[in-house]
Image 1 (cartoon, rainbow, N blue to C red):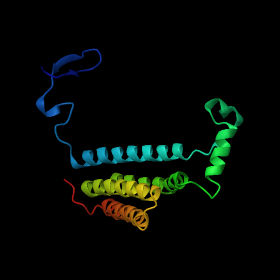
Image 2: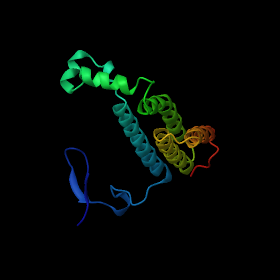
Image 3: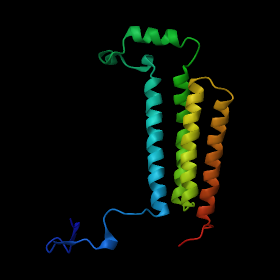
Length: 177
């Protein structure tokens, strides 16, 4: 079955067979294209991690009265207060840590990509940061010290690695095609 595409202006459009070199779906990604796919996938996973952490750490005391229709009752508020009388829950701490770290990390990771950082190194930085953040979440949830701190620090070092990649890319240190 031949793939077809439109050629010509709006008034003279006709369908012609797609030339093999202009297939609408790429058979092979260029390194920068692959880097963009990885970057977007990692950013999407990080969004879901953040959203999930925020949902798990909802404080019912922060909701207005009309939210009782959503099941946020005085009983839920009392239950929450009892469970958190010694301070924030681990879920809240994870959510707060992500709110503190994700924005700047993503800003620097994406920046390294956009200013011309070497694509394979940028992909590695995105994937490593995601890996270390997932390790951090698991270690925090299950009280695994010193592994939690190690995972956190490795994530921070990954962002510093991305900063260096981005600076070198912006300085056009990497050869262009």
